Structures are given as structure tokens and as C-alpha cells.
Length: 66
Image (cartoon, rainbow, N blue to C red; front, side, top):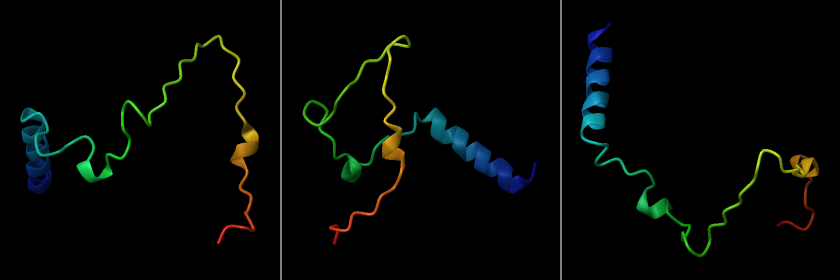
């Protein structure tokens, strides 16, 4: 292994050993969803029949946008 790669790997292991302190999961300025208010939870079973709404996969230009 090249020395540079070795130093990068050692640095990554040091960050992991420190439990990723200084590396938040979500940056505070990007945390825009209020857990209790804006977040929806959906529970599905593997046996449930779900409509995939494939019509939403097709892009359509909205002439009234802008």
C-alpha cells in the first residue's frame, strides 16, 4: 500500500475510534424537518398490495411554471 493511502486509512480509523465526533449525521443548517410535525411514517407489510404510481415517473413540463 502506498504511504499516502496508508495515512488516509489510519485517519479514517482514528475518526471511527473517536465515534465520528466532529462529523454530525445531519448538519444543523440542513436539519429542516421537525420530527413530530413534518415527518410522516408509513408502515407496509410484504403482503400488502401497493399502487406504485408509475405515471409519476414520467416528466411533464408545466407551462405555468415561471
